[in-house]
Image 1 (spheres, helix red, strand yellow):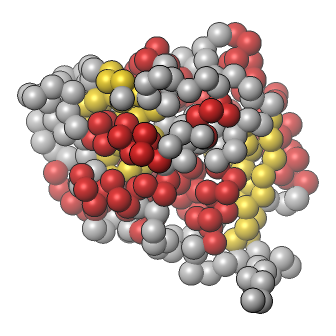
Image 2 (spheres, helix red, strand yellow):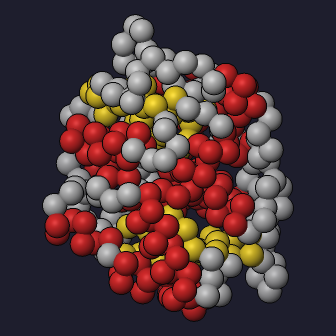
Length: 291
């Protein structure tokens, strides 16, 4: 069997990703998504920063310092990446605001001369793009960390409502264990986040899968077909945002509505038409459900 064709390395676009060192999911999934492009002349570049713990203590949050991420972005700049993204969700649960991630992206851009962004900014951009109001949240984290993610979304200037938060139970023992979650367990958590946390609550219009080391991307189409809820997976949305930074709006099949409907047709358009429904839960105090 002949090897797959290589991209034209003299003319290809290069999408750079900064990866947590203990992450084993995002590189193969990102590479697989990009290989699904009708045109194969965009390649991923990866570099790593040391991340061995997930939490809100000072030692953990220090792993994501601006200095550390700028240094990683500069390594990708050495390879002349066309866009650079911090491929991690720390901005959603370290207690910082959305504006803090924009400041980080701006600092990386200034240091490299290359447009930079983050998974957190990508997720916000995707929810804006979909035009939805009611969000579910699915995470492999502790209830305390899940609550941080919920608070992040309800506290933004967009006024989003979080209808349900679902977590894994038991919580994986560390980042390496998160990537080893079974697809059945991941699907159960994501489906739970699609449903309202109370009989009177709204159903989610989109579910945020907030972790770039949790291999939920391959489940998006299946969950969307079963629930009618768009899956905004962290690995997928970071790739989606990076492609748009490069000016690529091609439809990519097999990874859910966000990538297969780049002009907000299909699932995205249906959600937009329903997004004006009355919010029952007010400020979005979705109950955290452990699955």
